[in-house]
Structures are given as structure tokens and as C-alpha cells.
Length: 221
Image (cartoon, helix red, strand yellow):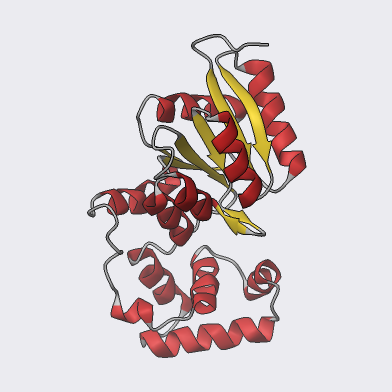
């Protein structure tokens, strides 16, 4: 059946089929002007589907087994500049947001969003507005304030930390206990303690409260 002329055509990219089904049901049932015309569960499937269907908006997962949203954008943005990409992810980590925005996504919302809020986000990015979940606004504004394609400003202290140390620090600053951090990152409590000790040593700070402030100042939280 041919879509009405004013319907916003959407391709949904996520590696969890159950999640895709839920989003499709929400949009198809409650939102007459937004229609999911295709789905994909991997980078390769996404690239093929988007090339074939030429949607107005792509709802794009950030992490997938064979790559992620940034890779889909890298392959398609130069080729399909009129297709709008909106990241839809469980992650609210600054590096994930920055990566897909720099790759060309027009917005980034988390999976806690409701169906109607998501439909509204689709309409807004289709209309040319950038859209972000409220808690992401701070570091997103920082990204937009820089020249397109520029790297984030360097931070010598932050650069001393490994990726895993940053992961531990982010959760610590959000108030997670060591046991909760261990469960979240699939590591032992002893390993968490080792990472925290290393971060304290590298930053020359004394306790988790100082670390939380330090992480917040660098928008890691």
C-alpha cells in the first residue's frame, strides 16, 4: 500500500528484534504520520536497507555486534545526504553521543523515551531540528560549539586514563557501589578497586567524592 504523501518514512536499525517489534508497534499504532518501512539488525543489513528504501529518517542503534551507528553513518552520509539519522540507544555515555554526532547524526535519544516522545523526535529531526534527551544536552552543546569534524579538546589528565578506568569512573561518579560497578562491567570487585586506586593515583585525588566532581567537570557523568 502506498504511503500518504506527508508520511515520514522510517527505517529502524537495532540488533534486538524484540525491541524493533516494540518500536514498530508503538509508531504504527499511535502515530499516523510516521511509518516504519524497514528494519535492520546489523551494519550490513542497515546499509543495504537504507540504500534500497531511501527513508526520511533512520532510527539508529549505537552498538551492534558488527559495528555500530557511527559505521553506518560513515558509509552512507556522503552518499545519502538527505536521509536524517536519529540515534536511539540505551547508552548515555558521552563518547557514544559524540561519536555518532560527529559522524553525522542529527540527534540522540535514549531508549527510556516513550512512543509518542519518539514520534515527536522523528518529526523534529525530519523538520531540521537537532533533538537530544535532556540529560545529554550539556556535552552535546559542547560538541556543536566546535567546528565540524574537529576533535574534542584534549585534556592531559583525562588522557592518562584507560578506557576501562573511564568506565569505572563514570559509574562511580553516578553513585554506583563497587559491587554494582563490577556487575555492570562484568569484572570482579577486586578489579574495580584496582582501577579506582589507579585513577586516584593518576588524578592525585583523595576519595570518590573528589573523583565524582572531577568526572562531572569533564562531562564523563
